Image (cartoon, rainbow, N blue to C red):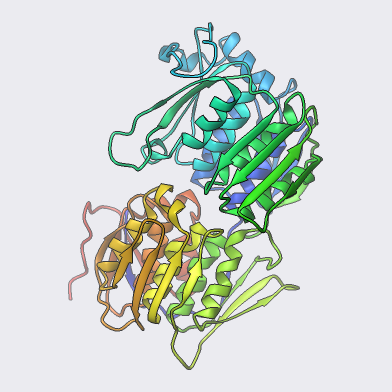
Length: 485
């Protein structure tokens, strides 16, 4: 599917979709609990469908008990998720995958003698890879985690580091191309992971979250040290979810380069009822579109006090000169037109890497130079987002230089830009960023392979059009075709 974009006339109000990061953490905690939990207003997207499918394969029952608002009942397996995972292999409940056979583990401790493995296809979800890559390592069963081509380029090194420290068996694939990763999925391992002291290096926070979810299930105290910490707001979010589920832990260093955690083992996850808040990461796209187009737009369902790190991107847009106002009581964020011009600046993006592409698009419409720093983790997402942002925005006429961990944008206030045919590279955030950038250009632009937005924001096109965007879907052309003049 391709998307044609013309200049919009934004006005009115949009509702931010539910948070992807909160939804997946709620599903994980509920699946590890002892009895049913209820999750209201979860995000239903490609990644969440992958999560639900994987959790169901692990014995979790997930049913819809209300449609308006959508509420899911999550019932963990009676014997617990880890026991179910072990039983699924031992009793052949995973027989639909048994043709894969036993593939030897390449490194680490003793070899497994079982003749089957638990195979989970995680689709495009990197979060699920790192979360389940830790949680299922606590089970004494051979596991294989795989996914789509994008997931197979994700670095497995953070997981393998923990497996080596624990002395458990593992193997990983080698990349087919230059992905900057030396080990990638399919990933095979066999626990059990013991409690203990674990050291992880940054900037990825997702493997740390996975280990935080796992530690309460182990026998004994675990101490986790995260050096060169990045994406720290996501770790705060994880700690909040652990507390919601009744888990006790201590932590420190959220304001430094080294975060530390202590979690006692043999704890029990408790059931809960919760409502998922709005997604700041997704909300940044319509908010930035309004900023670029110097238009008025209000988004609802956004809590300024939420732990989502991407809410911090608002302060960067404000530093660029945007007039953005938050109403904590009403949970709204509003953009207002300005009389001046946007201006560039230097901004540290270490805690908000998912916001880097859309901030790069905003910087193209600023006057002067913008430097987005501490963004190296962006190279290991669904695609190399630093390269994709620089190369695709350049097709509009933008001047961008990419470094190993930064983007430098020489903005012209939006002058000199022209319509272009650009590629999403199969990355939902790149796709939405390019659509937003195209909103600031007078003539028709085209974004190829726009289906990937379903990963995080399935209603992006409909919601944006309802707010004044001019998006038109092309479903039949392999290559963008522009309308006749």
